[in-house]
Length: 87
Image (tube, rainbow, N blue to C red):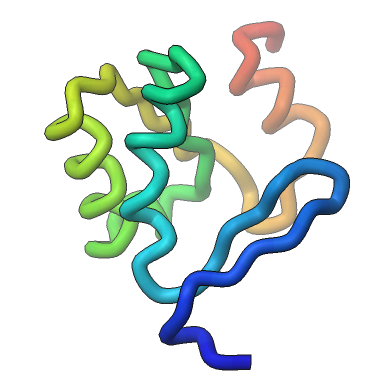
């Protein structure tokens, strides 16, 4: 599989992946009238340049983006509850 191309499949929802696919995210969100995306990750990934580029791209496209980065690398129930403001 050539990861320099963007690929997609449905299971059960559309999934896009490959080099450059994150550049499609802002248009997808805006096309679906979603204006305030929540990016969920762990603290390590939140500091990596590719993640910061995704966040910046969304903000440059007029989206009000929040990051929740208090996840374990293998999320547990308490992470999900904390992210939802229920803990």
